[in-house]
Image 1 (tube, rainbow, N blue to C red):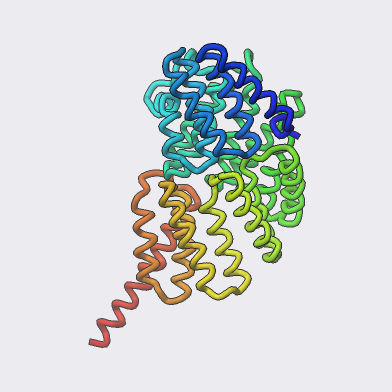
Image 2 (image 1 turned 90 degrees about the horizontal axis):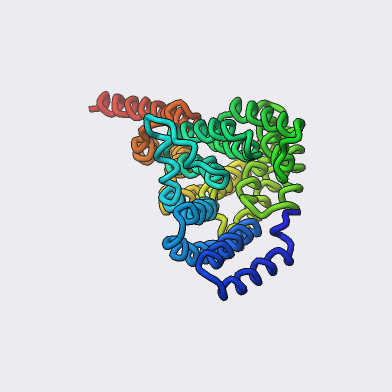
Length: 380
């Protein structure tokens, strides 16, 4: 079990903060930083944000590195909370050099910042920048290996990169990253939670490479460990398992997992993949044979959530699901209009599965409209 889940850990942090109030702003800021980390690990994201809001003003009058540490730790909480724009704002000093023509100077990157830099691609992908996400992840990995001699950070960086590839639905990249992580564990370069995460990645790969039953079993193993060890992104991982169960025809169990995920979001404020959870619920309801108004409502809810977060990649997936439903109902024009509006926003990542599928469906819908127009002309 993660140490932050133990009541004694939280109690100790609260006492430390109370004692720090008798000291200077640096001590109070450090205590708030620790509390923020504990609350995030416990899945109490609203309290973590409250700590960040108190810590940032204190840090502004102190050392710039302390302010950066507070802002980047806050960004972790914001990513998990679904506030992706704000997270990228806090991470901008780290992201911008990675997207420039020159590599970022190593002296600006230290351990805590590098971990947060490695998580920045998650927010970038969700906001609709798949190529930028890939580039930042590549720089973070290079920096991780560059400073591996003085820190054991590279497993954490590679884990974050693996997660980003999974968001992009790049099965081969995830498979390669999992192999790399397994090598690190076998060499004793494991961080405390790495061996618990590997089954989640491996199970996802198995599901997407045709080993469905094995993948479900591996995902179950990973979920059981995650539930005991941490309260971070559990709703997100439940979505992957629910999707796998639906592929195996176990729709009812998959829907049950998604209900658990939605309850987890309500309880913790972990809105990282809330839009995707609603989309998956709609897909499973459709597979179950529910009245089409029910899955359509889920897809519309997913789109609403994604728009509220400016989460273009989640919005694209949800709109794809809705467009396919409308296509089956004969609403080809509505489907094309809705999907074209989202697809037209993107300026990069056209080699990713989501955008390729969107382009293919748009072409299919366009052909249908052209045929319909031809028929109308023929009757005049």
